[in-house]
Length: 235
Image 1 (cartoon, rainbow, N blue to C red):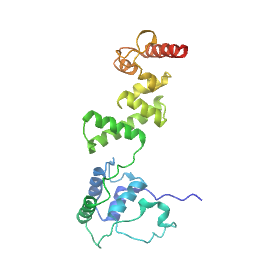
Image 2: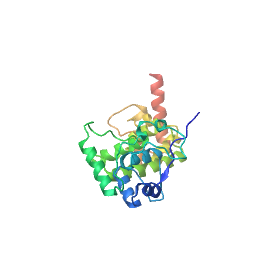
Image 3: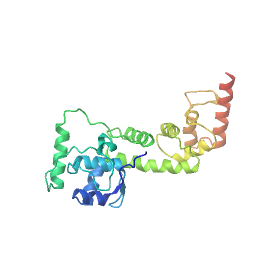
Image 4: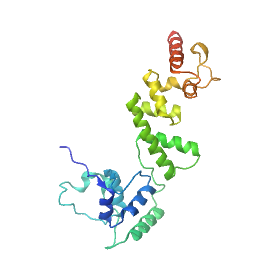
């Protein structure tokens, strides 16, 4: 039997449950790197679990409409906080921050994110040359939407292929990747530095860079890759 996962909640619903204002919860979500637009936005179940784990009063009882044991949700769903009745938002926030600073468990593990989003965040951080910030995460989420839109224009939606295109393009201009993908060019081929006759030549920019900079058009990119394939096949 397949168990139903914990349900999603809107920001204002979870804020009301915690006794916070929506603005306070939005600020906490922003600090955690979650891209949330408004109090009406829906939070995924793992995010709801994490917030409840850190801020909700501990309880070993289940809601009346939840027929499953607490263990059904995994270890991350177990409440670890012990709140005093009537604890305010500021008190809860101080308690959680104090606990994280005094925790003997070592460095905090990075939060899991989808491979495509993680690759985009790495490219954004590489451009800025610093540790990930809230602004970096927002930019990565914006780029993630752009890359998702490119999948509707011919880009292969396989995660590994999308990540490869992100590496080739530094995460920028996904529609160019979609155009080359429609032409049957793989990201590994777009990264090749090809000279005349399809010969590999490190002195040349990559096929992608030349196409991006309008040094060659799509037909010329296809011809260069075709020549390389023929040489590779013959060799």
